[in-house]
Length: 243
Image (cartoon, rainbow, N blue to C red):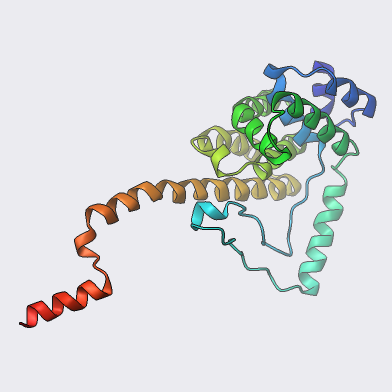
């Protein structure tokens, strides 16, 4: 990927459509992390205020089977609607117009790298493979003094698109970069977006922790099965004791 294009994205500039189209024809595997970071920086960020539904997408990480985890939707009110409208208006000032072109460019790369996978599987595999490189790209740009809101947009998209498998063992990789950006400014817009990045990161990390309990609990119940008898076995045992 052209260094000038990456610099332009992290400077907050709108990269021309022709540039993204040219990049789409030149996939470079070792630059996948850079493209993921740049795509996140180019895409419009949205932070929900009026609802919390769907923030944790990894249902199977917290519940077995095919049932979906439903998070409570906040009841709509005029206050929440005004807050959402205010948030959208503020974010509109930092959102660009090249997000769809960036996504199309990334999709072209992923089709070449992961041709046998579905669209969703391609992105998740790309994040599994290149998230460390993408976060490193954001870290480097932060050290260079690039636009903080653009850096947070990049992290926001990376966390939004990642699932608990992608974030497994990588919480410590992502958190310091986020905190470094947040600690360097008291700007309310940065804090607003940054806290949502943290919310997404914690959601995925908690899903990882719950998933990690699975083998431990399975082993516990298997090794301590005499202490957890079935109701029928319990009734028989009570009858034996009475005799």
